[in-house]
Length: 143
Image (cartoon, rainbow, N blue to C red):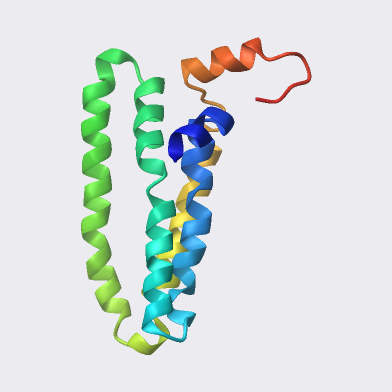
């Protein structure tokens, strides 16, 4: 599902713009009236949230010099896994009052801020394939 989107709107846009809808779905979970609806919302969110995995890996490898790809892949993996390991401890502290479901809006909000930051930093960095496509586009066309 990610590949057609990436071809049409680019790797970075696919990676970044798939997340806000999934983050909003996550933020809505504590507001739902039943366990079934909450579970369905989490499943829908999971489907959207994974669109970034192949595009993130492809984008990262495309913009990094070939000699540095293994190091960047390792560093990226360690950073993501480290951040994932911290989440449960923070969520546990916020569940002191479980009725308000605080971890869900916090996690959704942080993810939206993360996505906007990624877009702001990297929006001008195109992989070589996208640069070539952009340069070949007719004048006035937007890739």
